[in-house]
Length: 119
Image 1 (cartoon, rainbow, N blue to C red):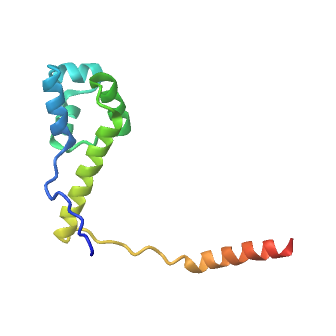
Image 2: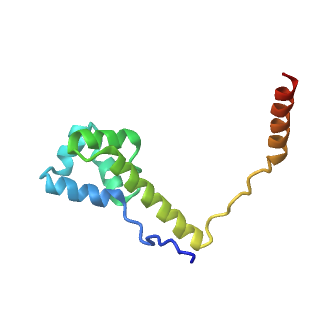
């Protein structure tokens, strides 16, 4: 029996979760921006999903808020993938076929076999 994978079709920016965390910790946006040494506009962009949570930002959030960086990175990745799936469904993405490189790999494997057989 073949199982079908289900994906969320509603992209939730990781900034939504960030808002909840800072609210729970009773830290306001100004305080978080100050602790991160970043402009408030960057945090606003993260909240809206316009700014990615980079590895550097994820590490800062981990140190300040105690939420592990892999959680932030996972939320960011899921959000971006969901956006890509939406664009794909709307036909806004054109995929480029990767070049065929199998013939080069065949030569490489033959080359390795030749070297082994000469020893």
